[in-house]
Length: 159
Image (cartoon, rainbow, N blue to C red; front, side):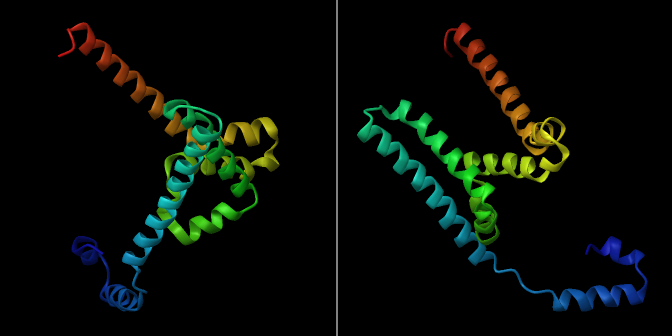
């Protein structure tokens, strides 16, 4: 607690803060980082294996193989979230499951499942974008700004 907030507390409250801080369990930061790295790396490795699979067996090139790979990752994330497995993995791995594609799919499906009792329109479809809506808006606005910058640079002769 900051010293400024600590000055507003009574001596008994300050003593309790010291008592609680001394007994607070230490967080295994290094081990949490290792687990996040392993799970995030595993998700990315699965994505790369999917891309290689589509390139090998369906004769896609590197660019076109990424679309079905992403779709399969999203589908797996949705299924694992629906069965409650993704949340258990996320509990163990922490930030490692926040790999953009699978983490985004998990956030949307989790919101939809959470609000399904409110009905299909006002519950599932409306609340599904509660968290994901801000990400979508940020992505669209960012893409628009980057496109404007690219058009401006190209019109100036490709500086």
